[in-house]
Image (cartoon, rainbow over the protein chains, first blue to last red):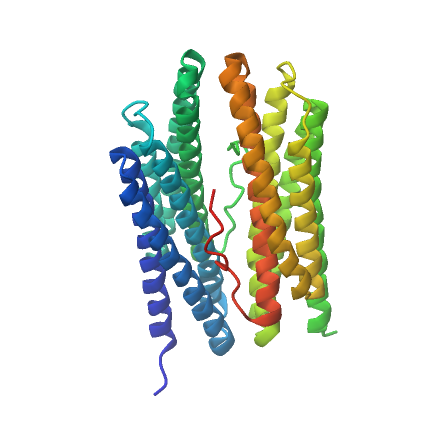
Length: 223
Length: 223
């Protein structure tokens, strides 16, 4: 029985959403482990990342299969090639969750430096951006995708604010250096998650409008 | 006059090599600017990055064009979809060069912390990995690509060694904190360049052998 191309595309979307949900939940859980100083919870993320890696391989195969057998053109072709890139991005989100989990495990062994406020806030925005971007992707909603591009600035702002704060800790109390450094690395990982969500949003605009919005803001600093 | 598909594929390879050369040279130049404490040289990298971004857009278009018009299957299909991913990776290498250039500009304003040895060494290995991976890509040489996967460990080793050294600087002399921190961020950027070169090498193996070598070493820590 011949299956319909539309049905196959819908399945591809469903698998991408599943992968996106897992990547987002891995980041959430990593931040949670960091906040609760719970090394056991942090370790769960390593298994979650393996599942994300498996989905990457499976979805890549699906995309290649559709390209070879259906030989799509126009919007369908752009959708599938964008899916290949988005899968790459989601896999990296999983890697960032693993990095954060590793920091959480190290920090759980040391006395608490300070209650975390900015990092959970960065995590919330970055994962919300990711969810919104994937939602915009399946709904082919370029207008929403465009709004996501703006949220990235808020994450960058929080990152800079946190950096200054942690720097003064380090200078005033050298015994905090290792811990403060670890938190700076966590914030860089969250910044990258927001950047990857931005990439996904750019792909959505590309699919919908066949216009390249990448490299749209030359003044956006690459920090 | 109809052009040959082979000719178009060769052009695609040439453009990818050009983009790879520019990305590699941007990283080289950024490390050079860091070593020579030359903010003017560092600023040249921003223009180089814009050229890399332009090439990304152009090569993406070429790939989509080939997929739509030639409807390739088998190895050619895998080559073109891998090219789409590699272009993404190279664009990120350019972003990392920009990050390093920004660090070079900041550090040129401050007294020298120490002569740089490990960072130029990391930069050499990471850019060599990138050149080798792209070379392997155009020659469809999976054997060479596999050797590149091993070089990544050397970069990780240098990163950890440098981290420990800079950490002792920071703890012993708090006035070095800002500068040492900047160098830690530079080393993280170089580590990511090596990771991206590893991604390219994995794609080469994938094209040649249609086997997924991603996530091949579960013990490779994602730091």
